[in-house]
Length: 319
Image (cartoon, rainbow, N blue to C red; front, side, top):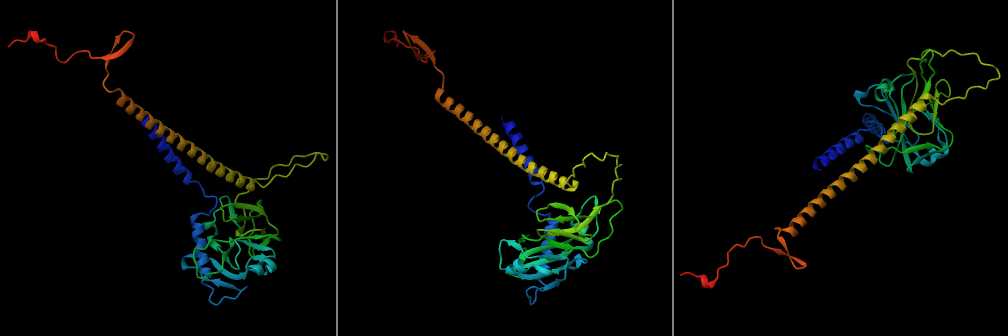
């Protein structure tokens, strides 16, 4: 029994290690989080005497040369009513932008990762046709704060526009795609609105990509004119992303259920062992030394097997 409990505890430890090694759904990778915190810090340093609605370019650290950062402070009500129609770098924000949680003033922090795009946002099987650009929102209450949590901004009206000024041509046979990286670790593909423009309803990081190697086109077989066209399928990339998300969610839920069952089983086994041990101790205390039972009439009574001292009659006493 003890060996079984020890094996189950070891299995529980292994499952715990596996569970905590699963990808996190609500956070970016540690490298991306560290980069966002660093950019937020250096972007806020650009505010010396900040004016509302004016972008201020920051200077990144020397070990991240090639990255461009900028920050702009806005009133929440003005952003919701007027947007940023004149544009903030590659981004155009239309009226209807709301943030959660609500703050009176917020700061939009822009970054262009340049040649660091593939380093911090690797995308196997694809090549970047434009650098990764990002837009994140922060509370503007304290412009000297660090390690701030991002606000969630959402376009409740017209989607935000991301227009890339320099886009290289896609390889032959490849179709350019917009790609977005949200703050939950998700990767989403969508069609390019125009040759160099994408749209989004939430903040994050964005670029235009294409498959690095395009498969040869499938031969088109003749089809009668009266045959209905084949239904359009969803983008394979989106299906792959959804299947990966469901696999991760299933692993997390299954891990929780299995850990709960193992925990209940181990507790039950421990209680069973403790109960059996107590029963043995109680039985030993109650029984003590076993006595021989003798029948006297219709009843039974304990009787000694051998007397310790032989009786002696007084008349047999010898001086």
